[in-house]
Image (tube, rainbow, N blue to C red; front, side, top):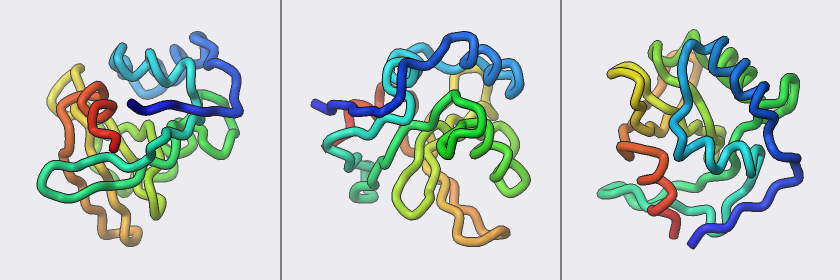
Length: 139
């Protein structure tokens, strides 16, 4: 069972709506159940099993706070020109890798791990069908 710790207050639902509006998406409810309560939160344990690929480390959830170092919009804006259209970061992994929702197939996003090796080389791996799948893979 994963536990989350955060030094942030709960996310303001109005801030969440602003982010959704700016990105023209709706975050999945299973994600919002955690992200609102634990924005900027760190999981324990922090390793996640990736079927057939070992494990990856999940450092923290991003926040809905403008100008915060973990601000979801800042992260999105810093990677959008290098990432495929339709990917929205929501979590920070080891080595600055990002956990992203993939909205390219529609309004119900899957979860990707996006590894950036340079401004031109990005590795995108589909790893789970939903945020709930990710939660159950912490080990």
